[in-house]
Length: 105
Length: 233
Image (cartoon, rainbow over all chains, first blue to last red; front, side, top):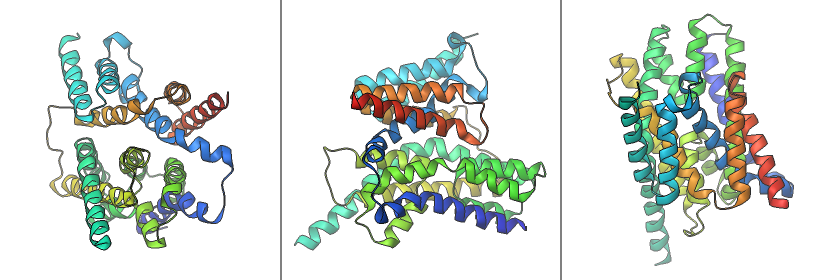
């Protein structure tokens, strides 16, 4: 299999995966439980992407109190909860990351 | 008059999507550049490396493909690995599908092509915001998607052709998890959603060792199950 075929095949497969339910829902009524569970897709998937970035930097476990990313993440969660502002959350999280990296041994 | 009004609101939705996607570029651009540098390090041809960014257009799958190509893994195995890594996009597809049913096939295909993690995160937040009703939210999705697409093409080109990552003292990639936090936390309004997110976060860490990002799928599935179960009670 030549390289360009891999790229085209992978591109097609990715596109069809992304199209799958967008296309399917036109032709098939999903059951009620499935429709109701879709509300939880963003909060579960985005959390499952973000949390390992905080707890397992580079894929490795770090002691929580010595982990600047975890400290920054906790600060960001608190700021996001109180302010609901994306800009403030990014600024507070990055500031906490820099401060914790500088202060922690 | 009606025509004019709807035209102006589709363009304002488009530009709102562009604007809301901008902060995510801070985190995405470094990844695009790193991809380009890694593709060169694996001695992939220039054209193929750039074509992968526009044809495959999926960061994690591209990283893994380049990594496996560099270590001489058979192409069929690389293909299957990429397919499994991208399975999470089927969840995004199901999640946005109810909002896209009124659109033409061309629109649906175009938005499916643009359905990356970062475009999805912003678009679904806009779709589920009931304080902003509107029939033109697909324009917002389009604006966010095109913005991310452009950034991905340019940043991978920079990595490929300039051959180095612009040095940054700030770990800018870290803005992505921060943005996901900013998008998720305000949406944890009820017990079911909060529990779903907490369980998904827990499972994502416990199952992190699973290959092909399957831990992510497992975390989403368990979290969604818990949310559904609590909602019923």
